[in-house]
Length: 232
Picture 1 (cartoon, rainbow, N blue to C red):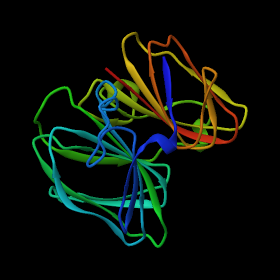
Picture 2: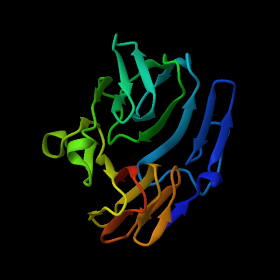
Picture 3: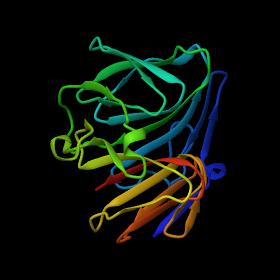
Picture 4: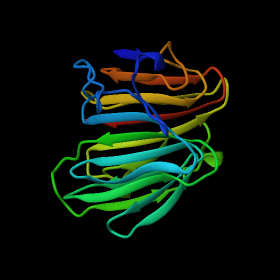
Protein backbone atom coordinates (compact mmCIF):
# COMPACT_ATOMS: atom_id res chain seq x y z
CA UNK A 1 0.00 0.00 0.00
CA UNK A 2 1.03 3.57 -0.68
CA UNK A 3 -0.99 6.26 1.08
CA UNK A 4 -0.10 9.70 -0.28
CA UNK A 5 -0.82 12.47 2.22
CA UNK A 6 -1.01 15.87 0.59
CA UNK A 7 0.74 18.83 2.17
CA UNK A 8 -2.63 20.57 2.57
CA UNK A 9 -3.99 17.63 4.62
CA UNK A 10 -1.26 17.84 7.28
CA UNK A 11 -1.76 19.23 10.77
CA UNK A 12 -0.94 22.91 11.23
CA UNK A 13 0.68 25.01 13.92
CA UNK A 14 1.55 28.66 13.40
CA UNK A 15 2.95 31.30 15.75
CA UNK A 16 4.99 34.43 15.17
CA UNK A 17 8.31 32.66 14.56
CA UNK A 18 7.27 29.12 13.59
CA UNK A 19 5.13 27.78 10.76
CA UNK A 20 4.84 24.01 11.20
CA UNK A 21 3.07 21.17 9.41
CA UNK A 22 2.66 17.82 11.20
CA UNK A 23 2.52 14.55 9.25
CA UNK A 24 1.45 12.79 12.47
CA UNK A 25 -0.38 13.80 15.65
CA UNK A 26 1.77 16.27 17.55
CA UNK A 27 1.13 18.98 20.12
CA UNK A 28 -2.34 20.44 19.62
CA UNK A 29 -2.91 18.46 16.42
CA UNK A 30 -4.53 15.08 17.00
CA UNK A 31 -5.68 12.64 14.35
CA UNK A 32 -6.22 9.07 15.64
CA UNK A 33 -5.54 7.72 12.14
CA UNK A 34 -2.13 9.42 12.08
CA UNK A 35 -0.41 8.49 15.34
CA UNK A 36 2.78 7.30 13.69
CA UNK A 37 3.95 4.75 11.16
CA UNK A 38 5.68 1.77 12.72
CA UNK A 39 8.43 3.12 14.97
CA UNK A 40 8.24 6.50 13.21
CA UNK A 41 6.37 8.78 15.61
CA UNK A 42 6.89 12.36 14.36
CA UNK A 43 7.59 14.01 11.04
CA UNK A 44 7.34 17.78 11.32
CA UNK A 45 7.87 20.22 8.46
CA UNK A 46 9.08 23.39 10.23
CA UNK A 47 9.74 26.89 8.91
CA UNK A 48 11.67 28.97 11.44
CA UNK A 49 12.04 32.72 11.05
CA UNK A 50 15.46 34.34 11.06
CA UNK A 51 17.06 34.97 14.48
CA UNK A 52 14.49 32.83 16.32
CA UNK A 53 14.13 29.20 17.31
CA UNK A 54 13.23 26.57 19.87
CA UNK A 55 14.46 27.58 23.37
CA UNK A 56 15.96 24.96 25.72
CA UNK A 57 13.56 22.10 26.45
CA UNK A 58 13.88 18.45 27.55
CA UNK A 59 13.53 15.12 25.75
CA UNK A 60 14.01 11.47 26.70
CA UNK A 61 13.72 8.10 24.98
CA UNK A 62 13.52 9.35 21.40
CA UNK A 63 15.82 9.39 18.37
CA UNK A 64 15.46 12.85 16.81
CA UNK A 65 16.79 13.38 13.30
CA UNK A 66 16.85 16.86 11.78
CA UNK A 67 17.21 17.25 8.03
CA UNK A 68 17.87 20.86 7.03
CA UNK A 69 16.11 21.79 3.79
CA UNK A 70 16.98 25.50 3.57
CA UNK A 71 19.10 27.82 5.69
CA UNK A 72 20.82 26.36 8.75
CA UNK A 73 20.06 25.26 12.31
CA UNK A 74 22.34 25.79 15.32
CA UNK A 75 22.13 23.16 18.05
CA UNK A 76 23.05 23.59 21.74
CA UNK A 77 22.48 21.03 24.50
CA UNK A 78 23.06 20.23 28.16
CA UNK A 79 26.03 18.00 27.27
CA UNK A 80 27.92 21.05 26.00
CA UNK A 81 27.51 20.21 22.32
CA UNK A 82 27.11 23.05 19.86
CA UNK A 83 27.00 22.80 16.10
CA UNK A 84 25.59 24.40 12.96
CA UNK A 85 23.96 22.16 10.34
CA UNK A 86 23.38 23.65 6.90
CA UNK A 87 20.90 22.97 4.10
CA UNK A 88 21.01 19.41 2.82
CA UNK A 89 22.85 18.05 5.87
CA UNK A 90 21.60 16.13 8.88
CA UNK A 91 21.95 15.96 12.68
CA UNK A 92 20.90 13.28 15.15
CA UNK A 93 20.14 13.57 18.84
CA UNK A 94 19.64 10.40 20.87
CA UNK A 95 17.72 11.73 23.85
CA UNK A 96 18.39 8.57 25.89
CA UNK A 97 17.84 8.97 29.63
CA UNK A 98 17.33 12.71 29.22
CA UNK A 99 18.78 15.81 27.57
CA UNK A 100 17.92 19.49 27.24
CA UNK A 101 18.53 21.18 23.91
CA UNK A 102 17.81 24.29 21.87
CA UNK A 103 17.57 24.66 18.10
CA UNK A 104 18.08 28.19 16.77
CA UNK A 105 17.95 29.77 13.36
CA UNK A 106 20.81 32.23 13.75
CA UNK A 107 20.77 33.07 10.04
CA UNK A 108 19.38 36.15 8.33
CA UNK A 109 16.98 34.03 6.27
CA UNK A 110 14.18 31.56 6.81
CA UNK A 111 15.27 28.04 7.81
CA UNK A 112 13.24 25.01 6.78
CA UNK A 113 13.73 21.59 8.37
CA UNK A 114 12.23 18.13 8.54
CA UNK A 115 12.18 16.97 12.16
CA UNK A 116 11.87 13.18 12.35
CA UNK A 117 11.36 11.26 15.60
CA UNK A 118 11.85 7.49 15.82
CA UNK A 119 11.05 5.43 18.93
CA UNK A 120 14.25 3.68 20.16
CA UNK A 121 14.44 -0.07 20.64
CA UNK A 122 15.23 0.38 24.35
CA UNK A 123 14.61 3.11 26.88
CA UNK A 124 17.41 5.03 28.60
CA UNK A 125 21.05 5.12 27.65
CA UNK A 126 23.60 7.92 27.45
CA UNK A 127 22.26 10.87 25.44
CA UNK A 128 24.33 11.98 22.48
CA UNK A 129 24.40 14.35 19.49
CA UNK A 130 26.17 14.22 16.14
CA UNK A 131 25.95 15.74 12.65
CA UNK A 132 27.16 14.94 9.14
CA UNK A 133 27.21 16.25 5.61
CA UNK A 134 24.96 14.57 3.07
CA UNK A 135 27.15 13.81 0.00
CA UNK A 136 24.76 15.11 -2.63
CA UNK A 137 26.83 15.81 -5.73
CA UNK A 138 28.88 12.62 -5.89
CA UNK A 139 25.96 10.38 -4.89
CA UNK A 140 23.22 11.87 -7.08
CA UNK A 141 20.71 9.29 -8.28
CA UNK A 142 21.06 6.90 -5.34
CA UNK A 143 19.85 6.59 -1.77
CA UNK A 144 22.42 7.57 0.86
CA UNK A 145 22.02 6.38 4.47
CA UNK A 146 21.93 9.42 6.76
CA UNK A 147 21.18 7.62 10.03
CA UNK A 148 20.98 3.95 10.93
CA UNK A 149 20.84 1.47 13.76
CA UNK A 150 23.78 -0.28 12.03
CA UNK A 151 26.10 2.58 11.02
CA UNK A 152 29.13 0.30 10.86
CA UNK A 153 27.42 -1.67 8.06
CA UNK A 154 25.18 0.89 6.39
CA UNK A 155 26.90 4.20 7.09
CA UNK A 156 25.31 7.37 8.41
CA UNK A 157 24.89 8.59 11.96
CA UNK A 158 24.06 6.17 14.75
CA UNK A 159 20.52 5.87 16.08
CA UNK A 160 19.34 3.44 18.74
CA UNK A 161 16.61 1.90 16.62
CA UNK A 162 16.08 -0.81 14.04
CA UNK A 163 15.66 1.86 11.39
CA UNK A 164 17.37 3.84 8.71
CA UNK A 165 16.90 7.35 7.37
CA UNK A 166 17.97 7.90 3.77
CA UNK A 167 18.24 10.82 1.39
CA UNK A 168 18.55 11.14 -2.37
CA UNK A 169 18.83 13.80 -5.05
CA UNK A 170 17.40 13.01 -8.48
CA UNK A 171 17.54 14.92 -11.72
CA UNK A 172 14.36 15.07 -13.81
CA UNK A 173 13.84 11.69 -15.44
CA UNK A 174 16.15 9.79 -13.08
CA UNK A 175 14.85 6.78 -11.17
CA UNK A 176 16.02 4.65 -8.26
CA UNK A 177 14.70 1.51 -6.62
CA UNK A 178 14.53 0.35 -3.01
CA UNK A 179 13.62 -3.14 -1.83
CA UNK A 180 12.41 -3.22 1.78
CA UNK A 181 12.22 -6.30 3.96
CA UNK A 182 8.70 -7.71 4.49
CA UNK A 183 6.59 -6.27 7.29
CA UNK A 184 8.45 -2.99 7.62
CA UNK A 185 7.18 0.58 7.32
CA UNK A 186 8.50 3.21 4.93
CA UNK A 187 7.67 6.91 4.91
CA UNK A 188 8.78 9.30 2.20
CA UNK A 189 8.66 13.03 1.56
CA UNK A 190 10.05 15.10 -1.28
CA UNK A 191 11.79 18.20 0.03
CA UNK A 192 11.88 19.72 -3.45
CA UNK A 193 10.34 18.64 -6.72
CA UNK A 194 7.60 16.27 -7.84
CA UNK A 195 8.31 12.52 -7.81
CA UNK A 196 6.43 9.39 -8.73
CA UNK A 197 6.43 6.37 -6.40
CA UNK A 198 5.19 3.17 -8.02
CA UNK A 199 2.95 5.30 -10.21
CA UNK A 200 1.68 7.53 -7.36
CA UNK A 201 2.47 11.23 -7.63
CA UNK A 202 4.12 12.79 -4.56
CA UNK A 203 4.53 16.55 -4.70
CA UNK A 204 7.01 18.63 -2.74
CA UNK A 205 6.31 18.35 1.01
CA UNK A 206 3.62 15.68 0.60
CA UNK A 207 4.10 12.50 2.60
CA UNK A 208 3.71 8.88 1.51
CA UNK A 209 3.12 6.06 4.00
CA UNK A 210 4.25 2.78 2.46
CA UNK A 211 3.95 -0.85 3.56
CA UNK A 212 3.87 -4.31 1.97
CA UNK A 213 5.45 -3.15 -1.28
CA UNK A 214 8.06 -5.53 -2.67
CA UNK A 215 10.01 -2.86 -4.55
CA UNK A 216 9.78 0.92 -4.54
CA UNK A 217 10.53 2.66 -7.81
CA UNK A 218 11.00 6.40 -7.35
CA UNK A 219 11.15 8.60 -10.46
CA UNK A 220 11.78 12.34 -10.51
CA UNK A 221 9.31 14.21 -12.71
CA UNK A 222 11.46 17.31 -12.09
CA UNK A 223 14.70 17.88 -10.21
CA UNK A 224 13.98 16.54 -6.74
CA UNK A 225 15.39 15.87 -3.29
CA UNK A 226 13.77 13.33 -0.98
CA UNK A 227 14.00 11.73 2.46
CA UNK A 228 12.91 8.14 3.10
CA UNK A 229 12.63 6.27 6.42
CA UNK A 230 12.45 2.50 6.93
CA UNK A 231 11.42 1.27 10.38
CA UNK A 232 10.11 -1.84 12.08
